[in-house]
Image 1 (cartoon, rainbow, N blue to C red):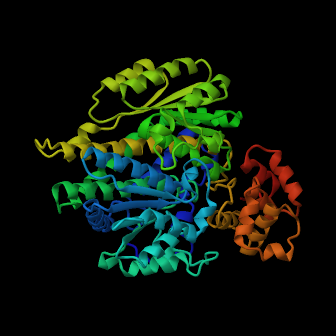
Image 2 (image 1 turned 180 degrees about the horizontal axis):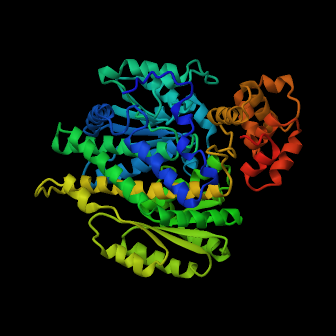
Image 3 (image 1 turned 180 degrees about the vertical axis):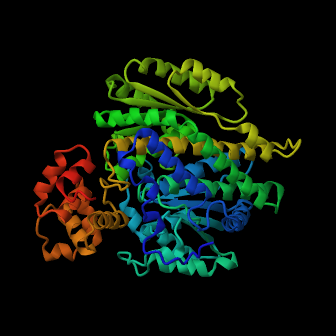
Length: 602
């Protein structure tokens, strides 16, 4: 195994994946094939680093599961999941899911999620709080009030979020009250030792302090290596999926320990991981069908149309999450890809309740779609139904489907669910003509989990939760492929870089500068100057801007558009900001505009 102190100059989560170097000029079929290769890296390993499949990571999961089991047994305990952006949304998703499972098992629901920016961040980009360790500490203190035994999962895919650093640092001074767990996908030695504004520590310092107490059982770090993302730095994909997989392994194992007091956890975890791998392979067996939906969605975005997800329950929530991640990733409008949920906020069940009064971006109910969106649908729009086997839900969706298929492009995502036999698929094939059906091999999966004639109802509920975790992963992979592929077809990436991106926090600002430096083959200083010129829309930078704090640059950048593409042109051409904008506006595809405007070798 390669040493984790590999001395890599760049965090692995920020590297480019050679598999997708030509994704921006690929066909929809090839795009989906590239994504399948990247997801296989996530599950089975990248280079010789420790992976999700390694016994070392499984041992870490078992140790953390022991700590979670102790909390679950405590009457005043809490399991707190915290993150920013995608990590925070997955935290919400899992807290909601496992509280429901604990209720079904007759246990006290004790999962809580924290997300930088509050519940608004579940739907829209609120990334600036990611840079604020004090904000992270405050919300954690509130969550810990009245609790006697807690465990915090600080989730940050790149091991960089200051929001999480503040929380972990607080926990390290309160080990009698809360156990800190850091989950991310870079080796600790790979963390950038960069200053955090208005704080006296760096993330690396906090992580190293946590690393020193790992052997004591008072704190933990879980960091399997997934390899670079398909779209450079887009941690909503591998990072989000792996977060879900790892934490489900931890929580399902912990619940098993509470129910049957077992110590034989390695076989159980290996079984769960094998199931996820099987699910991934089965999902991409229908890559031709997925590619057809990618084509539809790409056509809609290129025609200034929209893509709408219609779903219910857990699958519908995955649609909302996928849609919410597109604006910060691709600098798209909030309504380019949107999700709607049967039952709205009553079904969503977030802490802050109905957020509809916050604006149009927070309308999530199917009623809103039917009343406000449906009447204006056109052939330029695509509606994607995310089905599951509940009979009443299928009836509602079928009625809407029949109305929509004459108004716009329509597709259906149907992932085969356990214990359903063929009746569910047969119904979908008969009534939904444009269905993408993923058949998961339950005949292979189920015997691995079932123990003889064991009919314990509680264990059966845990088994079902594990199996439905596989269904959820399949849905997530498909939705990620659709939204990623559609934006690639619209020209939102150059090679495998998100060149049209928001610069809404320090991580994204540094990533943008790094992209300009790499693609323009210029110095860091030239790249930074080009980005600042783009942000401030000026051709000569005064001294006060050069010396300004990062937070000032971010505040100004929030109002800008095409900032990185403009900076790319400026770094390669002797032109003004206005001339760079004009060149980009003349072409819909960023790749084409850049190639026409500067260095044809890029």
